[in-house]
Length: 226
Image 1 (cartoon, rainbow, N blue to C red):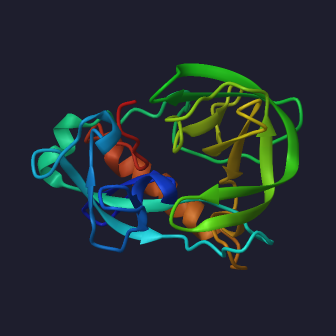
Image 2: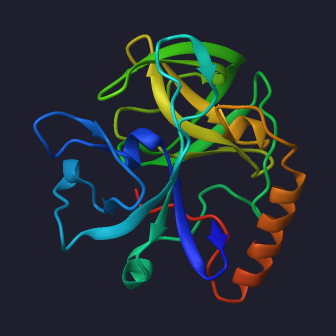
């Protein structure tokens, strides 16, 4: 997405803000440098510095079902803009969001499995995910799909195949990766681990940003190459 003249990448909090470089995993802080490619793919400082952690939706740890999203934003290093793919796989026209429905076919482009599709099985799924450096985190109101992801696909934008509208953000697998789990992105409330106001104003600003950036060949929401 874009705020003023700055560009940001949307991904999972556990992708952008959990650092594994030390003796033990630790949660990152705003201002931490983000690498692309990531450390698991050989990324190292200073050559692979791609962004700076700008915002994190904090987890409510403990295993109770209090969380709705695993998400964070990183401000892209302007020197790396030309190295990133600004296309949104499967999105038609200005980025818009849609509520998931059971039986909906969804598609995603991921680091590990590339371009795949699945079918929504549940739109009110609950799960407890055990994160490094955080412990058990309980999620409610999640979307469960047939398996079409593997480890390393976290942070992939999930899109409704028929409409080309954004459904969610992939972040986990269930029962040994027998299913794929993603957080809903269709309302402001779904992008927070606390209550908030309606997201109509945010959606309007995203559409306006997309129209401004269409002339620059840069969309309002960005994802790095898989």
